[in-house]
Length: 202
Image (spheres, rainbow, N blue to C red):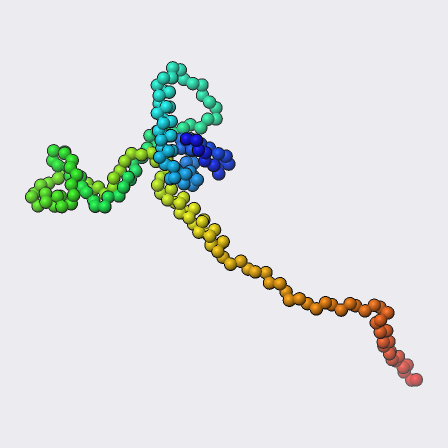
């Protein structure tokens, strides 16, 4: 794949294949969710190629390899494949299963016409989404949540940049202080007159 993804949890660069099939935090990692959303086709292709090579190596292997200590166990292919919505249908259609267990894809008008003619279905299922089996390395809800978090952070950063900063107001210039006079220029302190109390009988 030739690309590396920085892992904030372990503080190093990793191949996205490692994140896809080994990392236990894959479905909760915001960084991988955003990377996977932007590079889904290439990541899914690398994962599919890895599992095909792994299955081929297992079939050709003659003797079991010696276990490697402290190695992370890769997840199985079945754990990565999920039914996923391919597209939302503009108009709902219905699957009509007749008494002979034959399934037909009909619209609502045809269902009503058959009911008016007295035809009865064994089962009727409403189909509103087109589904397909795909790799689901990160659930779609998690990707949307990561996008909302990044958008909120960008909005807060933009608000901080646009917020007016307080301007420091310089105090008005003050008049220079008069130089204190020297000790010789100061007037002599006045002596206080003290009145002596006269003795009684004087």
